[in-house]
Image 1 (cartoon, rainbow, N blue to C red):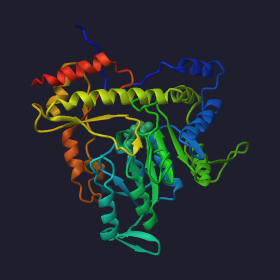
Image 2: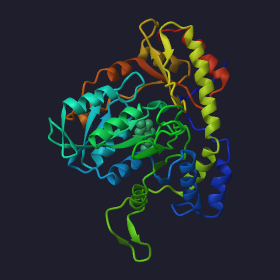
Image 3: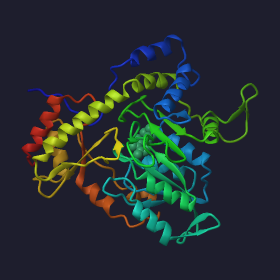
Image 4: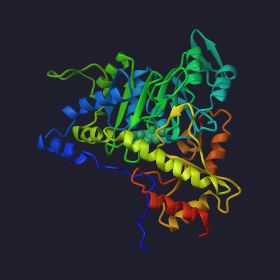
Length: 390
Ligand SMILES: *Cc1c(COP(=O)(O)O)cnc(C)c1O
């Protein structure tokens, strides 16, 4: 059988994408000025139930702007996770600030116990400022990432942040649609619990605008400033006066046209993601050495990415599986190399990184597109049932 390549995660554009994009082209509103952009901002804010949203070119630029509007500057430090995509942390360096790397827990999100220990034992809290004993610098903010669409422990994180006056920036680039089902933040979406949150609409995310992002917040002041900075900081439209250094980060009408069509389908996408996740999970139950990591029970996850944990009980190790699946035309990949191990971060402080390293060695991501059909999922399972060294 001449089998089609099964990709890891690709866009699903079977809704009104073409119709809306065609409309943008027919009306010749293709740049940042069109009506779809504000419409998309309003609809995202409605969907995640927050005060407002500001569009941007991608998740990375959104994190960059979030750091600026939260007042983080080159004299500050920011606590960040080491196990995530590097774009969560690079913006800290864009503004000349320095990251301090934290470990993950078994949910792959930030280990809150280590975070608390770090603040308590490695820092001093004076005049409302958390000072890092090693660098003598002010730790002003933390960036928390909701890895793979799971939710970090926001109750603990907000409690720690309140105690030490830390601004909380939520990198919810992978987690649009994830929300709490219970607890203090019942009903609250990932990205709307801290001071400011960011979504990404990159091609591999659960919904896509080709490339794009969104900043969300309940703080009107932050939103106004974010809009200002993403649109060249123009304080007078006619005379082109600018009161600070701005950026050309606004989303275009073409991107927003795609985004609106995608947003109409997000609940369907989440349903498909969950069905496929449940299917895999059941099948792996009978296979020694392989299991799919859980999402937390306290949330409705968006089930964006599936993490397959490879134990010693399985015939192949992580890299052998990736090679084997590739030989069967199935794409899979290891999770990210730790950010604190990457060259640009060689000199930066880390705090007891342990679990992140273990998970890095044990996990692969397997196909999770909303286009994945049941026959393909069956085929992937069948292949993993008969492992071969290739
Ligand atoms: C995708 C992603 C980003 C960056 O989003 P882009 O839209 O690709 O710039 C940032 N952080 C994490 C954790 C991501 O997965």
